[in-house]
Length: 164
Image (cartoon, rainbow, N blue to C red):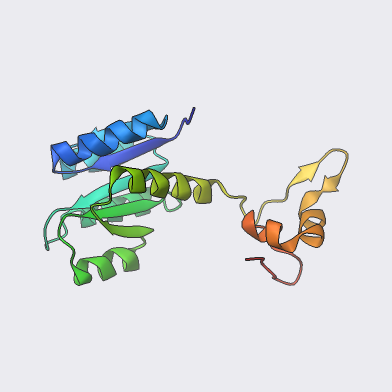
């Protein structure tokens, strides 16, 4: 069972309910906000692991939520879901720090995206050392034995190598 919380900020209640139901089915807590103001307030009060914000028009109303989310929690992934695909909004969202910009993904695709982003957010912090009382510092041991596996865990070998 997941304990992570996903904040959904959508002006389309039906679309938000579809994604919220899917997330709850996967074991995530879904906090659903039907307005930008409510979503921004939830960013201040909820401990969220991911934010999904909608872009309903070419005006990119979700910009404020994206900005606030990245300001309060810079390591929390933010995904923009567009009802209206707009290259200018896409470039702006990605430049601001969104991890993805999608045109109304199917719930199954969104489930994969959420799980993938959550896994990446939980990856080992490269500045942290992984130690074991018996084995000692595990980072050099893992990276020396299997550089590709180490790269998949987000670990860097000495000299800056990172496996693919």
